[in-house]
Amino acid sequence: MKTRDELIDIVLRTGFVANREAFDPDRTFAENGIDSLDTMTVLLAIEEAVGAKFSESELEQVQSLADVERTLAQRAA
Image 1: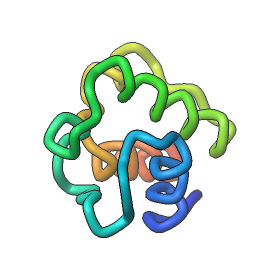
Image 2 (image 1 turned 60 degrees about the vertical axis):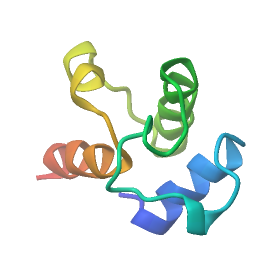
Image 3 (image 1 turned 180 degrees about the vertical axis):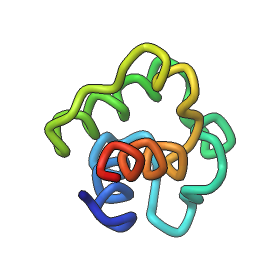
C-alpha cells in the first residue's frame, strides 16, 4: 500500500494543488480547492498508481485523501 506521502505526491502530480503545504489530506478535496470533476481525475491517478479500481459505492464515500487511505487499508485487511 502507498504511504500518505506517496498518495500526496500523486495528488500533486495532477496539478490541481499548488504545493504540498497547501494540501491537507484530512480536508475534503473540495476544501483543498479541487472541484468534483478534478477529484475524479485525482482518483483515477491514484487507481492507476496503486493498481486498484474503486467501486461506485467507494467513490461515493471518498471525499478526502484520508478517505482514500481508509478505503485502501480496508482492502488490505
